[in-house]
Image: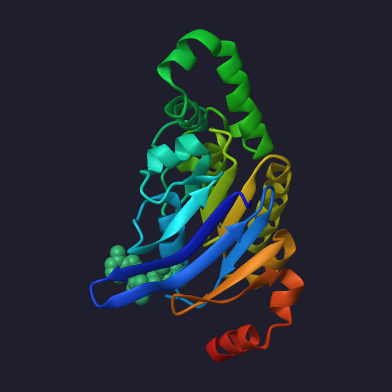
Amino acid sequence: MPLLEAAGISKVFGKLTALDGAALSVGEREFHGLIGPNGSGKSTLMKCLAGALVPTRGKVTFINTDVTSLTPPERARAGMSLKFQITAVLPLTLYDNILLALQARSSLLDLAFSRSRGRLHEEVMTLLLQFRLADRAFDAAATLSHGQQQWLEIAMALACRPRLLLLDEPTGGMSLEERRVTGELLQPIKQHCSLVIVEHDLDFIRDICDRLTVLDQGKVLASGTVAEIQANRSVQEIYLRRA
Ligand code: ADP
Ligand code: MG
């Protein structure tokens, strides 16, 4: 049984069918890329996975549980974490942003009894170190570069130790060097977490992903290993059509 299975997902907005029976299957510790032309339904599918949108039809199963009608916080408690295209960093220090992310995901009992202040401090610093932000811990998040803000948000999304991380265009607006670093920063999380990532940069996605799913007009055009997708004639056609 895969970690995440979305089947027959349709989403209708008024007269527009954004998703039309899309499907996605992600295994344990798999990095899965979701690609496709603009408007093909990638963000809508990510929102259906995370619970920000309820699909018109279809079913999302996560760790053997039907989560289709669960709210985003309920899915987060089940081990799903996401970072959206839009920045969600608060006007606080990096340290406090991570601390809040850790606390938001712990129960009060957990905080009161099992997690001492020292332990929380250690967790905050470990995450900041992992994302090469430790030397900026007590700076205001607003002083970070665009790329660093994205890394801070990914660190925040990982604070709850999710089994699945959902990233919608995390490298949007990043420099080439920041993209390269983002790839490096994501690799280690594979030891404990699966990833679904939406990206326009095909080189980036090919480098970090194990499998890809290609959406076109709300439907899955192809799904498979990176090599299979690269060799797929219909996929080549939609990307040529766009160029
Ligand atoms: P992608 O992320 O692949 O660029 P989206 O999932 O954002 O595509 O959008 C797919 C289609 O659904 C687009 O035509 C978009 O305009 C439409 N859409 C997305 N969200 C909404 C919404 N909340 N209301 C109406 N239409 C929407
Ligand atoms: Mg999108």
